[in-house]
Length: 94
Image (cartoon, rainbow, N blue to C red; front, top):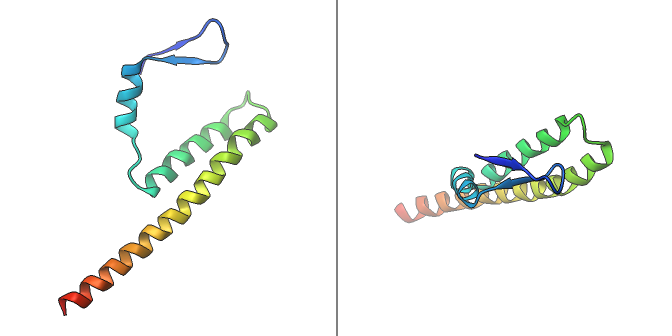
């Protein structure tokens, strides 16, 4: 992925549309577990950043944590739905 630093605003990164589309296809989450993995990766990046102050880290981590909780809930619901489907399939096959 080609990234270019913007001269006008320090710390920002410009990505080409091709880079974004290629990256999106390669990393598109399909399940709640995929979302959790991506959120976990991003949370680790924020936590490991030595140049970022604590307040900035907290501002970034709070919404990521909220999304992670929602993804956990959805993952549990997916598992429950799958279990119900299996029970119903067994009942119809008997």
